[in-house]
Length: 616
Image (cartoon, rainbow, N blue to C red; front, side, top):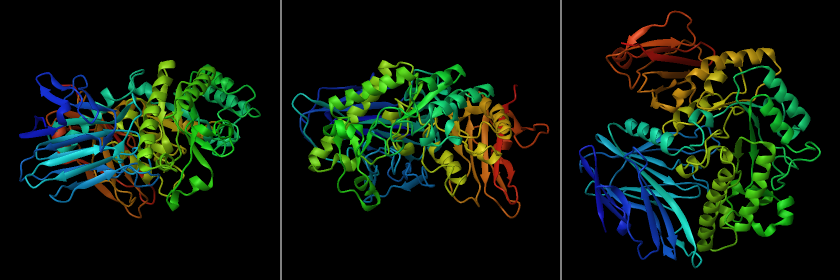
């Protein structure tokens, strides 16, 4: 074995990556492949201390680990593992979690059901005294990671596929999970912010600037149901929205436009001819004529029983088997998925979707995936064959998405998958997150559920957001982020006036959601507790604080202490709910004495505080 070391604070870190790696003056590089047929391709993102390696397989192998290394921390130093829940359409989506590692008690974390961020986000922070290491798994299917403290104080990390044995066809090369490491110095939040910057700068699509990737959209579905859309009503609404002259840049059409509607029409890849006699092209043209990009929803992977794909190409489809009771509907309702691991099926999907994108003028391609593919990969085959199906499928998914962008260079990809269930860094480098969870506006815990998601997901991912269906301050402020969709009644003058006022204040500050992030209170779904967080740009000294509280029978106070500020500089504070003169305070005062927020009795509270650094 070859051992490599770099420093985390004062502690050396050893990475045992096998014979494929060497650490030299030029950094991490690759060496000839080993007997298991694994080939590691490693590089460092420009200007970063991070290292990423991709793993490729030729020939049969048992238990191919994408990561298996040891970190050396001081023996007496505690090591805390920080991670977050993934998305599962629950109010607790993206809850931050942590555990101090103990010798003999490994922590095993894994995805659920075949989508990478269902259950657990594939991002981890091993924090010691004075520094630590971020570890991320890049794989859009199922993965497993283990963190084990050893008796001598070291920590062994392994990560890779859940399934252990693969046998590619002769001459076939398969891509396995990627791994990304980022060392840092400072407390664990310093590591989080270094990773947010890395994800923003090196693992985000580069065909547009970040804020152009993230739309501010008028969604049609505040006024028109999924299966009620027609050429006539969508074109008319696009014209009406354009006439309002709102600072909206995107026209958002979600599911239901295809024959059979949503969800039973999935597998009918064409627009409903009765509702859309000319296809979707007139809708795309109306959006562009109004100065808006056209965002259009697709779900190419899921196929329902009796649809066109099920009738014409059943050999391209995978069927589920052995699903747990809670997911048995997939079998009862006749779910199938299009096997993207089959070359002919994938090529058909690329051609079909590309024709729609180009004929309609789609600027933002929204890919959904409402199935748990693990039980489709395993349906009716051995465990070894299921593992091979999964790897070929995920390789095919990457090829499909990459080819869409190759054929449509300006295309923006939105990564949905039942809301936030494929947020690994391989999908993040290809797409953005415009819909982070299906626990949303219509849920009983709203708005605390969406507030808590902003608090939790922002630990890792800078580009995400929501928007609002209501135009009251509580709804609009709870949905703020790097992107926003507004399914409101655009023919209601009062609603439009409220949205216009909100956009005038929100848009000049939207860039701050990609800056450094600090949770100012503990994460909670209890609306009787305060939930507050801060975004701070260390270069400009500008920042934003949001603080939320549910309905309260009495005045409820909370002081939060700001982070990241220069203690010697002064900052001007603008409270969205106070039109008086903005006070000026020092960074030291804001960090030690903090800012006090008051809850509104008998009503929900959503406070926004914007601050700017005063010139010297």
